[in-house]
Image (cartoon, rainbow, N blue to C red; front, side, top):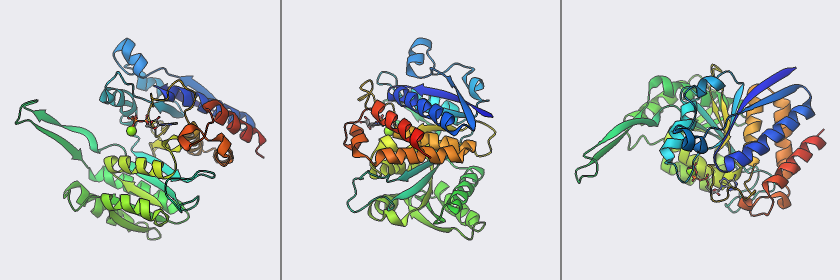
Length: 357
Ligand code: ATP
Ligand code: MG
């Protein structure tokens, strides 16, 4: 029998609460399925670790997890540690060396959930956002001179490489092709940013020739926010840069009802390194410790992890269980306007898994 070794990194805040729920659900699924086992190794890296050791993860941290089948990640960020320390010290310290360049973010209105858009229901909004996750605006390049003086100048340099853009574009066309509508929207800002973004447009047109069956179009990122809000039905797969997709996916999560249900996968498509699965949301210290964090995003991330591992049957079973639970408003957590606790939502998903045929 297959035994998957998963590195669980709960991180900070509600990350600990939702990963605890997620590992429980995954273990239940493995038992229910009977065809595979899952072993979790837990790593207590994050802001608490930082306060004790001055680093977010041990120096040999990456080598401790590089042979795992996948990484199941909670969230990082604490009110008393600077954001760039937590982000660069842990999340990006895993994503970048493991070359998880494809960040995939499905967004869909789940049964029983009403998003903020009137007249937009289940089925009207079914997207996957592909975010370039290794370069672009978050390359960390640039600097500051004359800091604090009136003549201070700061530069934040975006780096786009032909190789980096081509591989994410090909990934996005492949993904669009695998979906029923075979539709891709390439998002840039090539009217105002005339180097990297123009190269994006050119590479999109080149790669598109390899996928004649994919219907594709181009959109400026500002116009895209309007289209997502006003014509969600017209969109299927989206590919965008690190920064643009970061912003679009928060919008997407909100339009689908809550940040608390939005999952993501950081993929190394070549499978040279482990991929990482996590909820989109952060550590949410405003609700930490209250037992009301919505675990659905973390469960949906587990669906993506199972798909990546090749356990499609278990992935489908978990998605069915999630949808059975969201369909019942009594099982909505406060972010969705309900009163259910993390425990209640988790128990309901466990029940639905056990009762699923
Ligand atoms: P980050 O900087 O890591 O992106 P953030 O400060 O942007 O974090 P989040 O921690 O993602 O913010 O939280 C944003 C808001 O959404 C908060 O009010 C938080 O309580 C709420 N929220 C986020 N995730 C959940 C969840 N799983 N369940 C319920 N509410 C959530
Ligand atoms: Mg945020």
